[in-house]
Image (tube, rainbow, N blue to C red):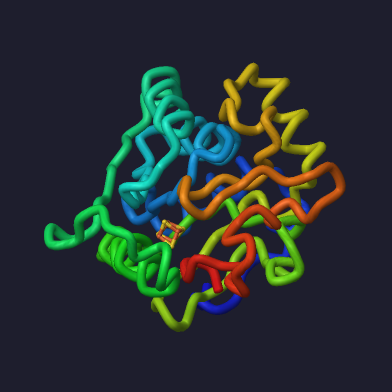
Amino acid sequence: MSLRTFPESLETGHPADTLRWAADTFGAAELVVTASFEDAVLVHVAATAVPGIDVVLLDTQYLFAETKWLVAELTKRLDLNLRVVHPLDHIQPDNLWQSDVEGCCNVRKVEPLQRSLQGKAAWVTGVRRVDGPTRANTPIASFDIGRNIVKINPLAGFSDDDMVLYAQLHELPANPLTERGYPSIGCWPCTRPVAPGEDRRGGRWAGNAKTECGLHG
Ligand code: SF4
């Protein structure tokens, strides 16, 4: 199989099937999942389909306490093989997010992501098409030319209802912020709750033209 063409059946399969296909195709040890722990679905799908799969949390130094709680809860419950990746040593908490969100995301997300992906053949993410216009055409699998790695988005076709149903079916804990109006959860300085009917990512970098952290676009 070319690294640039993928089976059409992935589009109609279950996310767990996508993970199993990825493990069969690239090898389980060649996969890395990056999870924001906005919810529990991605890590549950990945860790149950491919036990022991490498799961990365990018610790930006600005994670919500509620997100850290969910990380601990799921690590214990799913026996996650969790790798917490931090910014480089010289990056310490500062006020950069107030003046330069691009620069802050670059040193706290983009650079640590690059290190996280090193040596891996395929990168598994939780990106979904309903996240917003910039993600509406997200494929289940593609080749990320810029990062020179296969990018797999097993939840790309999942709606918000699908996420709720999956979480209910598997009795998964939720990020406590979800019921407080945070449908999309990133760093605390750059995330606010949204009003009913508002764009689900409208609370990210509110008041700024930025819509993506640089990991996915
Ligand atoms: S989301 Fe905000 S606080 Fe987090 S890395 Fe980006 S600019 Fe910094």
